[in-house]
Length: 215
Image 1 (cartoon, rainbow, N blue to C red):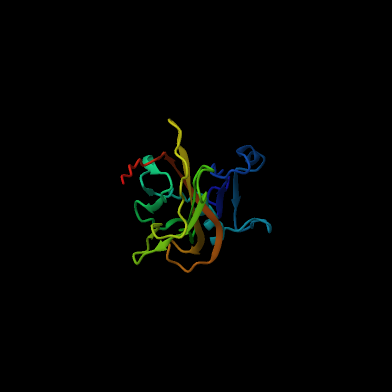
Image 2 (spheres, rainbow, N blue to C red):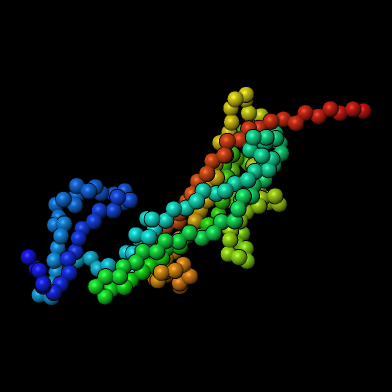
């Protein structure tokens, strides 16, 4: 059937990364469709465009957790001493390109995510403040970093952890996301997309420093 005919076969594929819907829903539809010059696509058929490709690229983006380094170190936090945080390495943008090159049709879109904000939560009510938020700094090379040593807000633990227990310091990194047409991340941004978030956790032990005062 259709051997030698002019036209294109369209094959249905199920994207397992999409959380809504199930593969069984596709079984009610034809898995293979042939559209030739004498059989145009239905008027209500979806048309693949750059925005659809950008959405597919968005689903494939994998955002790294914030690479935290604490001072004092996580296993030796100190009561009433501010917890300073920085990145162990500079973070870069994350981008994914989705493209097609089929039957003379070339189209590409790239989704780009930039880290913009870090929020820390102490993981206990025995801290003041219980959380802090920092804007990331973009350096000349295009990387993003944070260093809270001189920040106005730094978490301070007010009580030692009990023997054998730890607090879970939670770090949430917010990413600004947009897409542009073309196969690279430096195209003109078109539209903003929902923000992304990546999360990391650090087990924190809080101790006291013993001191002896002599007159």
